[in-house]
Image (cartoon, rainbow over the protein chains, first blue to last red):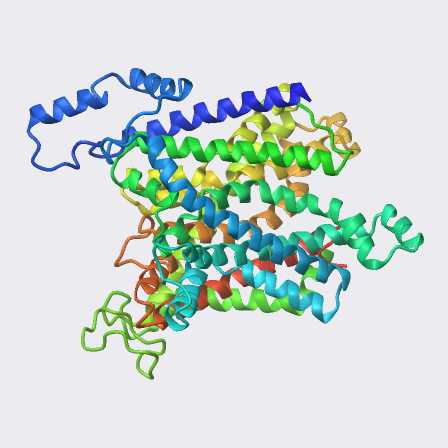
Length: 306
Length: 278
């Protein structure tokens, strides 16, 4: 177990080092660099600004400094949002993304698992087919279509919510609904598949033979194992949900992390681009680890190996 | 192989999806040629009108014929979807093949690299890449292809590992077959089934990624159109002209649906053990 955690920690550190290096390399290739976006600057002012940002140093020194920022956890300032540390910006964007993502996750699980179970308990009936067709349709509806449609129906026609922006607590509903519906379709399909497979196993037959009711067979005995494919999907998906879908943030004009990342790329803000990429990568690593641990706990046959 | 294709064709839904895709491709290839309108021809007197006999799917806010633009955008979206998937499939098959054949430490190291890549925030890299290199068309293939090969590599490697110790491969080795001969005649043909299945399941994901980039203004650049560009334009004026979002949206959703049904159908047909079909 300790060996497993250690190897995962090492892998995580490798991921983050690689992410810093790649983002750094890509940002350095950005045409213009961070300074040229400012107009009418004198050559001296540009040189002073470059020196202040450390851009006059050779690339390997710059890369070393970037890595040092993350080793010492002393994060740099944003190039573009002057005077604001990148950690401050992440701390302002992440709660928005996370609020939407968590709500979406609850909608996705609350809708997807029961629907998948409903379909799995009546294989090849009309209800099963209809549910799965609806789920496939859900997977094929991109957020850039569903989002505006939801905004139009609930926001502009029914006037239940603000059509866009981030002003009151209820602004979380429409973006979360958009993401939640799409993910619930995926989860419903995985739940059905997992349950069909599990219900064919022998321990389920034993439970039935004992005289357990169908509901207790499904929900007490089978669902635990059937969750495995859902969990496998949920690791990367949860990280994606928490950090927010860039599209949904653009559609509903939310000041989330995704919007800050796009701004950092367009403004040639290397420090911010690296920081957000590292933050994303850390979350992905963390969620993958959590999924592995929960899977091992749910299914004792899975061994954690380094 | 033939039995699998028969199994595939037996389902009406699969046949319908395949028929729809063929029809769509024909329409996208030939539609813009026979259309009386050029995809970027503006008619400022007929701005944003809904469907009519002259403009079957209406016009956009610059008076351009929507049907022509949708079909033209479909060309771009489908081309990106197919070509980028091809790039991803080639990288994935080569990587998986080498990893599986090499075995041992090389294999372990190569798969560890894949594990690490799985944790990358690829969408960030792709966005940076598109900003860096000025949103060039060919770059979209490379960027998307470079992202989507990971699972393909795992699938192929698993197949190769399972195959390479089977008796018929040992027999071929014993009878003096060269390494290249074994790969070409014995391994690749047996890997091709899963590769086809997984490729068909990758295309919709790739098309979504292209649409995401174009929607954000980082992919295909106007006046050129892809479905992502049209959806981005449409979502901005949806309050007043909802059809500008809905018509390209319907094309996009139907295409993704057909591709998914096709992928699921191929999986069920080639892998009868899978539980999706009982």
